[in-house]
Each structure stands twice: as C-alpha cells, then as structure tokens.
Length: 552
Image (cartoon, helix red, strand yellow):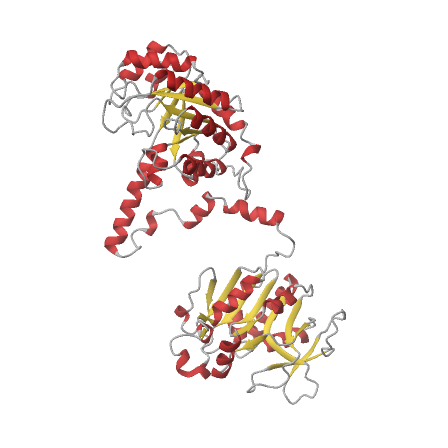
C-alpha cells in the first residue's frame, strides 16, 4: 500500500493551500474517460485509510457519519456537526472528498451557506438528493415523497451561484427509481437538474439487479457524467457500467459496516474471555495507529520548529532499592513508591523532570519491581538489586547513556530550577551540589570539596570543579552532591567507559554515584559543579518522608 501524504498535518488548518487542487482533481475524475471509484469514510482515520489504500477520492457518507455519531440518518446530526467531521477528514488527507449533503440541509438559502462552508474547508463537491427535509434514508420504506422539481432546481442554482471555485462540483441525486416513481420521472428530473446546472447526476436504485441503472444510462446517453451506488446490485461486473459510460462508482458505507462488525467481535471476545490473550495478535499494533495518524511527521516538525532548548535528552532514574530504614512502609513496595501527599515519590520526581521539557525517562527497578507501573516511562530491571548499589543499577542501563542525559537518584525531590540549572550548562559532566548541606547525614551524605566555595555572586562565570569527594572529617567541605547530574554526549561516553572498567575490576557492585564520579575524575575527566542552595530533599528515613509531606 502507498503511504499517505501528510499535507495538512500542521497544527492549524491550511486546507486553503491545497483546496483549489482537490475540486479540480475530483472534476477530472467526473470527466474522465475511465470509470472511477471513491470509497466511503466517516472520520479522519477512515478517510486516511481510504487514501492509504489507493483510492483517488472519498465519499463522506451521511449514513456513516450519522452512525459514527450514534444518531439516525435523518438529519439528526446538524450540518455544523457534519462540517466539523468533514474538516478533520479533509485535514487528514490529500485526495478530494465528495460530501453526501442529504437534501442540502434546508431550502435554497441553507444550500447557499452550506456550499460556502464546504468550500472553506477544502471539500471538492457535494451531492444533494431530491427528497424532503428532514431526509429519510432511501432504504427505509418505499414510495417516499420527492421534492418539487422547480424547488429542487432552485436549490441547485443557488448552490452553483454561491460557489467561488469553478471546479467545485454539485451532483444531483435522483430518487425517483428508489422511491417507486418510475423511469419517466427519473429522466424528467435528470433533464431538469442538468439544465439547472448540476455537474453530474447520481441515479439510485435498490433492486438487486442493475437493470434500472443500465436502462437509465442508455436513455440518458451520457449527456453529463453519471454516478452510481451499487450497494444493492453489488454482484454486477463493472464492465457493464463502463459500457454505458458511467463516470463514477461510490462504495457507499462499507468501512462503517465492517467497523461495526469488527468492534462487536472483539468486544464480545474480550467480554467472554476476560482476557486479551486471544485478541491482541489479531489487532493492528499501537505503532500502526501512530503511523496512520502521522506521529512521524510531528517528530520531524518538532526538529524543525521547536527551540534549541528542546534537546533530545534522556533521563535515567535509579529506583531499585527498598529503603529498609522505612520498615513496614516498604514491605510491599520500594521507597520510590512511598506516598508523598497523595502521589508516589517517583511520580512527583517524574513530573518535575517533565516540567523541564524532558519526556524520555527510563527507571531502573529492583525491589518489588511490579509496584512501579507509572505510565509513559521505560523500565529496566536490576534483578541483583540486593547485591548492588546505585552504580550497579546504572550499569543495567549503560545503553541509555548516549547523547545528552540526566542521571538521578530515585529517592530525591527537587524544584524544577535545580534541573534547569544543570541543563543550561555545556560542560561534559555537571553535578548538582547543595552549598548549604555540609554535614554528614547518618554517614550517607556524599560530601564534596570544590575548586571554589559558593559565594552567591550571580555574575561570577568562573567554572567550579570537583576536587574530590570527602568525608565529614574534612575541614574544607563545600557542599553535598544531591544525587543529580547531567552528561553531554562526551560525558556519557566517558561514564560508560568508567562503568566498564569498574565491571572489569569488580568494584562496581558496592559503588555509589559519588565513587563512579571520583573514578572518572581520577581518570582525567573534569567534573563541573552547579551549586544550589536548598530546594531539594532526599528521603532516607521516615523523618525525611514527613518533611517531604510538609513542604511538597
């Protein structure tokens, strides 16, 4: 199948840029020496499927649009609601759409406005039927009343006078045969409608043989294009209509009907089996849906139009540990899923990362991994979580350390500006250091000595580097590493290399991020410090959790 051109996937309606070509393309189909075909659609998705399949045009069926909206085909959907559906259909495709306009949604005045609104939405043409408003579907009952010929001709003239594009087509649908009024009435109406300006005639029949249609075509003698809808006489070979110079065939409602059957089948199976096991393999994948609605085009557009601050930056969150200091609170879930004022700690952390524009997030799970099931996140499992610490978990995600990336402990919370400060830095390895936290915390603080202490000078551009990670006995502590860092592509590659070295020498399992960074520094990599002053919390104890619940 051919790929669908995404001409209108632009975020606002640019149909005007191509609308002149759509009426022209449809007019060419009507006037072609070949028999042409258009396929029914009832929303943007089905319209795109029609184009993807290879059809050159679309029939926007009134029955199908009404059914998709859950109402009867009796003008219960207002013409403005129909217009909204048509706008989505037109924006989703690059091929022309012929609209089932029922009876024109009223008298000549409604018809004038309807035509103008269709043109504004890039629609190629409209077909109106010579019955009374509100319409009754042709397949309901028999001997339906028809519109007065002169009144209907006036409606056709009003529509033609209102169009601004000469190629916009108005097709008159003759209901005389389907309503039991006979061939003579059908031919009389055909002649009147043609003289009133109709660009083509749609002759309709509901008998299972094509005899009425073929006789009409022979009598009409191709004075103007003829359109047919072989829903009832579907077994007739198309060559019989070619022989009578039929211009256009409408496959009128088949996408809607098969959609109903498919939805019934899958709903019934899921209902009865209470499972997706036997269904999932039968369905298009979610990736197919994304492809059909143009997600790839959006990704390309983001690269073209979003500012440079929207860099593709991955985030790796280390959340494998239980947090044994919390006792029974982490019996059934890791500490990253502890409740902080109605939301898991990890969800709050992810939301903060999202607020800075980063959405590609991978979480390293371990203890009670099944309890971590937040949406829109990738997961990697460290099944050796009981034997490893933070660097052992990070080693499970070394493939994610490519390009620019963020690495964070999973048990911290911080304000968005803390992360934004890191993202603004261009150096290869930048760590966030709290200048106000200079005391050890139960032996768990990762304290640092830096090339320069924090002085609060906003205009000081001097780069501050990590001198070493130190312990609480050092008299020259300048702050605490908060468990958050940013890597450039070069920095990420350096961290990957250091992880491989630690795996080779067996030092990786018991290592913290501070020890990984110290190893990188000793290997000649500069570790740059981005100072913060508060606005973050690490949750190591029940006291920390209570504090988080008070300040968040």
